[in-house]
Image 1 (cartoon, rainbow, N blue to C red):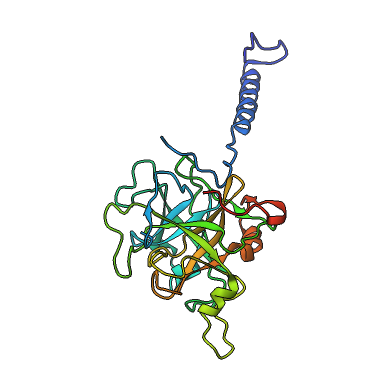
Image 2: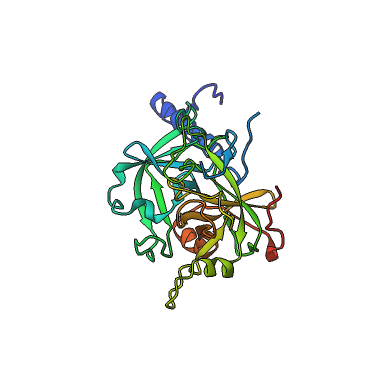
Length: 307
C-alpha cells in the first residue's frame, strides 16, 4: 500500500494514526484469509502389537494417538479435531479428575523413536460418557479428551471421520485395528514399538451374543457394542490397545466405527474383540465436539472395505 502524502486537512499525528489503522485493517484481512481449513478426515497422506498383526507403515493411520500416563504408553485414542480425542472411558478409571497424569502423543509411528515431527500435548479434561458404570465390559465405554491447546495438522497428524446415519456394517465387513499393545498376553510390544495393524471382519451380533452369553437373563453384549475378529483365535487386540480405533473404509474415507473396549483374554478361541460402537454414540460425540466430520453412503450399501 503506497500513500504519497497526507491530505492537506490532516496533521502529521492524524496521518500516522490513519496509516496505522489502514495497516491494521489490511493485516486483519490477510489473517482472516489465512485461517487454516481443517483437512479432510479419514484420508492418510502417505509418505514415499496387536496379536497376530503386522507393522504398519509411517503415517498410515495419522489419527491414532498414544495416551500416556506418567510418561508411559497407557491406552490409544483417535483424533477427531485439533482439540479433541476419543478413547475408551475405562482408560481413566480412578483418574478422571487427574488430567495432569496424562499426555497425548500424536504423529508417532514407533513409540521408541517418535521423531521430531511428533507432537505431545497435555490434557485439559476428560469427559466419560454419563452412561458408563466404571465396571469392566459394560456399555458406554467411551470418553472424550479435551487437549490443553490446539495441535497442528500434518501428514502424520490428521483427523478420522465418524460414520453418519447411512452407514451399516454387515457381518464379514473387513475393518482394521491398530495399536501399540501387547503382542501376546503378558508380552509387550518390543522396541522400537512399531505401530501394529490387523484386519478384522465384523462378526454378526447374534453370534457374538451367543458366544459371550452368561445365562440368567444377563446380556453381556449390549446394543452399543460391536464384535470383530476371528472365532478361531490367534489374532486380536490386547492389553495396551484399549481406546484405539476400529476403522472401516467407506467410499474413499476411513471411518471410526468402534473403540477397542474389552474381551476375554487375548486372541482366544470363540472370544473375539468387543468394541464400543460409534454408530450408537455418534450423536453424543457430535453434541460435544464442534467440527467433527461425518462420512458415509446413503443406504449403507457400500460399507465393505476395499482391501
